[in-house]
Structure formats: structure tokens, C-alpha cells
Image 1 (cartoon, helix red, strand yellow):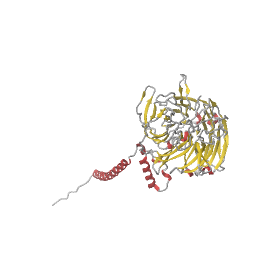
Image 2 (cartoon, rainbow, N blue to C red):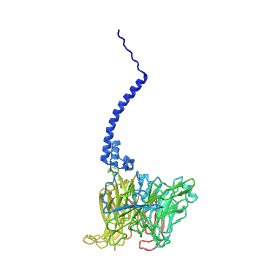
Image 3 (cartoon, rainbow, N blue to C red):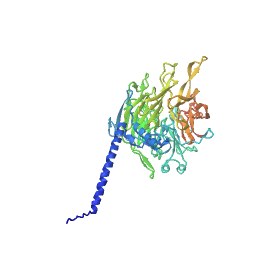
Image 4 (cartoon, one colour):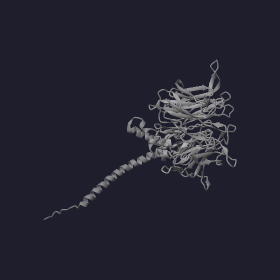
Length: 617
């Protein structure tokens, strides 16, 4: 008689079985995922994604601005990531080198990874206001916030007389003021009058002057918020505030002066806005510069990751680790600069000064930064693209003339690139024009390839070669209802003189505002003025909440003019005579803008230099 054996299973058997099944399922899923992963890695390899492409794709334009759902947005992001690696390599003969200085030694070598990348332009600062030339790392706006424009008129709210130092008075080129609404935790620590420390709507105007002083005002009332800080040397350019909103200001000298040893030097100053004193200065005579006899500072620096990026007219870009320490509870701030890393360049036909038509060294424009790519124009007429991590020159583009106007950046998420707009001066006689006339050149450049999208020339005055007209003003790249335009302002524009037969017989000196179409550079509108009403002041555009654009153009006859920016000369809305030549670029906060005059009339006669606050209504 057979006996069936009955088997019993312990609970741990079922546990083991469950784990085994889970393992098999997991292996199958992992295998599938692995295939997808390899496919994705292969795709990434084919797209050659740069390191920075792993950052938030929202940093490259406005992916949520278009309709089409998540699939379209995801495709757009992939396109943007793919393109964020500079592929341009043509350097037009330029070469770069780097030196690292610290307190103990000097060494010429590649620096450590600088770590100066920005995710997007909004990551530069969270300070309310205009804190550097052009408002930020793209140099694309001189106005903070939006304006309410109904009457399309302007009125002077307040004015203040400033002084003179040597041959220079008032505010000069680029001369843009800063407008800042201080953070609540910073305001009580500032060296301002007590009444301002408790004022919730306090917006401070910070305005360096050619008379050697830095002036401070309450934007709305014109009251002096603190006594002027005397630096003792003419200040021509635009200062920069600490990008994290800490009370430290950086401003450079526009001229050289003799030190105690009789050597001509120029310095950049860190100004403590708690004590209202110069905290630190650097510069002097820098023998690393090829143009070491002139090392003034007209450029407005950027501060990224507590590192000052400061170009100089000596042809060097300084990268200075600041090591800022700020204690709002104790009310103290200090810097302790570390390595001073110096970038310089050289190239064919460059000379220490403008000589016999040669190019010369120097940076007067302010650098623009996109992620880890720095764009800057030089006095020799090149746009340089520099990797801020390695300080390696990636490419250079010939701009056809000395370029003091700062490059302006515009991201294009749909095209997956960033565009660079440049505008040159005129210092070479054109063979096809009458004596004394040449061309100023406007370019749109693909910043990630170095390829020129379009080029447009405008006739400008050359004279005897010692005067540079053309475009010293920084272009404005339109938004809102002028998103198709880029606006440029020209000095010494050649206004055609037409004879009885309808032929252009010669040109006369004047000013010109031009709106170019972004896509191909065609002229949408142009405003021409004869005589002294020309421009070195950069165009400022105010936008309303619904995107209507109003252009403020300040000329060297002393006029501040308000135009409907969409139609230009067809719609002059308002004009103010400020009684003195305007070389400076205004800055705006909402409906209020601030600008200064030079202390000279257009014909060279002297007048009282002033700072004005104007309200647009």
C-alpha cells in the first residue's frame, strides 16, 4: 500500500519565492531601461552636450512663452541644450594669455576653473533696481520695471548742480547712474541719513561724476541721502553694485593721474557704503598690459560668484576674487581680494596706440556674459568670445572699427542660440565717400558659432582721423511691441545733401536714430537731425505692462526726447531742454529716469553741470 507524502512549506519559502519573482521582474525592467539609457547616451553623444547644458533649460529663453503643450516645450528645451556649446574657432589672428598675481608671486599659467557661469541672466542679481551698466550681464536694459504712460509727456521732478575737476565737469560717457531699492535687512546698515533708513519706498540714486565725487539722492524727492564721497579723480563710466545686494560699490577712474613717485596711474575703487569710504583700490601701472601707459577704467564691471570682472583700457580683463564679508547685524562689510587673474590678448597690426591706421589695445565697452561665455568688444575692432572657466579665447570677429559700444545679448530659445549685437565707430576714411566720411558698422552675430547673421553700414564723420564718430552708444534690443527691432543711436551721422539733379553731392554732420529689423537688418525707421543733436548717450526704452514701448533719446544739443518706439520719427511725444550737452546714458525706475549733463553746451561754451530726475507721464 503506497503512502502519499505530504509536504509542508514554511513561510520563509514564500518570502524567498516572492523575492525571486521580484528579482526576475526587476532584471527585465532594468534591461529595458538599460537599452533606453544607452540610446539616450548615444543621443547625447551625438548632440555633444556641453557641461553647462545640464543646467536648468529655463535659463535659455522663455520656454513657457509659446503654445503647443508639453511636447513642444520639451522639444524646444532639447534644441536649446544641444546648441549651448560655442563652435566658433576663427580668431582673426588674435592670441590670448593669462597671468595670475597674488601677494607672494606672479605666474603665467592657466588658472583654476573660475566657476563664473550663470544659469540665466536673472540669476545675476535679485536686487531691485538698475545695478550696473545695461542692467545686468546681457547689457540689454537701462530701465527697471514697467512704466504707466498716458499723457506721453515728460516733466523735470528735481535737479542738482554738480561740480568740475580740471577740464571735466558733470557726468560723461557712459555716465549711467544706478537706481537701487535696498533690501530691508541692508537698509538699516547703510551710511544714509536716518530718515531714509526707515523709509519703505526709498530708492537711492548713485551717480559718479567727472568732478571726482559720487553723489547720492532720494529718487522721488531729490534730497541728498548721504554726503558726496570724494574719490579725487574724474569718474566717467558707470559703477556696479555688489550683485548680492551687499553695500559695496565698484567704480573706476576715467583718467590717469600721477602717484607719489610721479608715475601716471589709474585705479578701480571699492567703496564701502556703510562707512562711505574707499575700502580698497587696485590698478596702477600694469606692465602686463601691452598698452601700459594708459590703463583707465571706463568699463562697468560684473560681479559673479563674488569675483569682479573688470576690463581696462590697457587691454586687460581683471578677474579678482573679492572674498566679501558682510555682517548686517554688526553693520560691517569688508573685502580681502585674493588672486588677481589677468587676461590679455594680442594680434596682427595691433599697436599700443592708434598709429598710422593700426589697431590698438584696450577695452572701453562693458563685458556681457551668457552662461560661461564672455563677450566683449575692443578698441582694435574685434568682438572676443572668452570661456570664463578657462579664460581661453574661443573666437574673434572683425567689427570693421574701434568699438566702444557694449555688446548686447539676446537669447533665442526657438533657434537654440544667443545673438550678439554690436555697433562700431568710424575712424577710417572710406574710398567710395567724400573726404572726411567713412562707415559705422552694425552687426548681428550668432554667439555660439561666431558667424555674422547680417551687417549694416551707416555713413559717419571721420574728419582728420583723430575724432571717432559712428556708434559709441550701446544698442537696444527690443521687446514687447518692438520685439522685431534693434535701435541704434549714432554720432556724426552723414546727412545727405542732395543737389538740384537729385544726386547726393556731399554730407553734412548730424545725428541719427535707426531701428533695424532683427531678422535681416533692414531699416524700419530712421530719425535724422542736423548739427549738434547727435548721440553718444545710449537709447533707453520704457515698456508699459502691455508691452508698448517708448524711446528716450538724449542728444548732445541738450535735449531729452520721448518717441513712440514702434513708429520712431513719426511720433515725437515730448521734448525737454536740459541746458547742457548730454553724453551720459539715463537709467529709469518705473516712470522716473535720471540723467546728467556735461557742463558744456553743444558749441563748447560752459554752463552749470546738473543731474536731473524726469518723470514720464
